[in-house]
Length: 507
Image 1 (tube, rainbow, N blue to C red):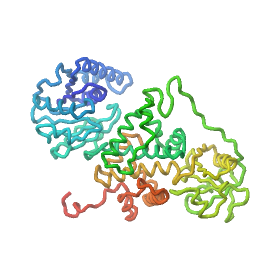
Image 2: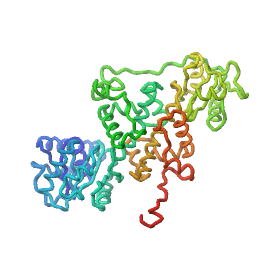
Image 3: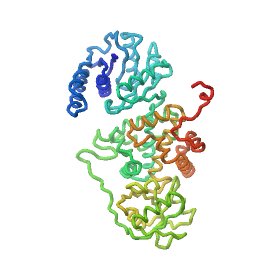
Image 4: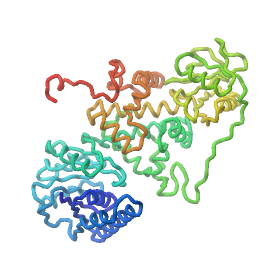
């Protein structure tokens, strides 16, 4: 296939490398001739590096470079061009101008694709004489390494184009997911679950950014914590995406932005690219070691309540050599531990008349991980808290102390990730399998959010979200219909379910 790429910046040159390496002839054009030269040199250097690392033969590298066709004029006639991929700046007028000029010089059979990450594909297509020839083809940076592409049909896109683009993408070694033309498409939309909830936890002073990141990594298994991720992406970019998706979905509470980010952007605290964001980088960077464990690890503990969480906690502590009481009520010296699930330690203290000064919460998700999460209420005795931390640290565990909140940190992050993904599935914006595939490849999560919910258990996640919603009254915690129905019917969250169209034989 002969492909023309217009825009020779980071995305354009990455797409060019990807397509040329897969055997396609790639015309590369830009309004700046020097940008084209720089892009070709960059692609050549990347392919040379691939040869050095043994990922490509010298012959294949040379052949890929030979398939790059630099254009002096991006609007040059191209009678043999079959596909155009636009990769210019995120501005509707600029993209409309690009496609308007291309319509004049390329055959009517050429398919147009925009690499927009934030603009409506339908609005871009509407500026064309033939809007049916355009679809979204959203790559992620760096293109050769990020092996996921969102195929986004606009409202007027010809029905055959999504499958044609999907076939192209997958024949070149990447995976393709078809996504509705909605704010954030799929990956950026799904990614709001983690970041918005992390910001909400910080707003409520539940924990510091470093502690939230540690819990996200060590308890949930994420490669990066949400604040580390924001610093890497750039807080200006993250804030703009959060705001645009929230506004695009008409202020959906699950996607609600935080008041914390705009001032940081104004102050230039954008993350790695400015040397300081949620963390400091460069000369100002400093290690933030965790506070040493100083309490008495030999104090007796009483685990309040029954159920799976309580039993697992008792067993884990006993295995580590802790003194665990088994009587009905805690002794006068015992530290009281409550495995909270969607509720608060304060609720348990009031409901069961527990001693407030020495009652603490433990997140059940953290019991079997290397990091345990300890929740303290305003009534907690600091000495008792230090002793509890020491007991939980037995068996070479690390312990993070957070403020008491419904569900604690890991549960709230997990619930939000699953909730946003379930909402995407419920709206029919993408198929369940595509949601999980796009999130694992695009965001690097250890598993897809719907499969993650299934691993925890749909009924258990529903209980968590109902408890969060009841305890906080915040509508962003309300369970989705997708989750509720599947928990009630015994279906996995990953199951697409039967629709009326299925029953009519329309699908």
